[in-house]
Length: 424
Picture 1 (tube, helix red, strand yellow):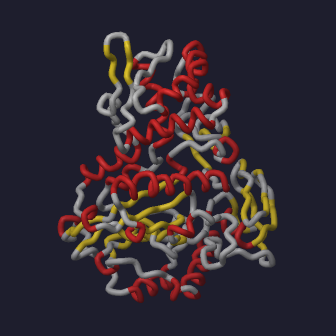
Picture 2 (cartoon, one colour):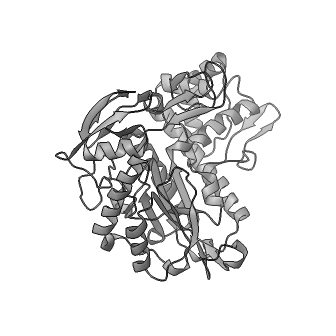
Picture 3 (tube, one colour):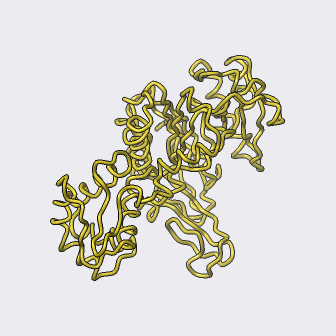
């Protein structure tokens, strides 16, 4: 609890000193707000509405919540605790891209799991213990430049490969924010999208991810002994898949192609056949009047395995329930994330490319608001193992349980928020 009191005071000071920088989001008075306080239990306080931004600022100063959220939905009575009485108007399209929900190679270096049954410790993204098979795992999920760059690339893919070309979403309708932890949020404020129900949003999710895609509709078929592939003239997913295959054939080494084909479940003979035929296959894909996909050992089932593997690369990695749920809350921009102490940073589209959350050079975009080289704290590590942390170009750790270290203010706050250390 002493950590929570310390962190709450810091958050309170931030909100007091930066109250005029808390942004006003659109349709403010029609949004529901929710907060998670600095308590051992993490129950959200929600069904709160504000008449103006000053009321929200006062709430922040008085309560300094651990996490702060607002709804994607609009209501006539957002403060009503009965969902049926809120008088729902519509909901923005919310997309949460968070590396918590999909694999990234760097997790093998910095994500830690500990089995609650046998105390085994390991690294990576695991669902069960390697030793005893238990599903009861405690996880320590970390961040690094690599996984945050992957999350950023997913947001760019979402915008430039899907929302703009396929849905005709205008750039000024899209609002981007670094979440303050392991990813990014994108909110689409579009009048037509606001009218969609959850089932219709599920269809959008399926389109963005490529789930439940029918390759037969896109052109894949068997006639006699021949297999005909996707039709290049088909737009949208057919075009995306073919373009991705062409890119892979032109840029991947044989080793990279071999690893891809092995990962999707093809045997060594089929992989060898594919590698021997890749130049002919590339020619087939690039010439408009060629649609015969002929590679020895590839039947329709094999082609579907291959195409599903490509779809996984083309589709967007997103947290599906967030986009489908019309009553979901998302982090309010300009607030602090209680798992890092970082700010939820809004970004213009043209600011996204250069944005580097762990080493941002622009003060107005820097989410690490507690940075200080002079102000240090002694902390004690309380977890068995704490991954290496690189922030602001400096590396800290890895640490082991019981170590007492003196670190800069922002690193101490980060480790305290991650609950892997306590003040000494």
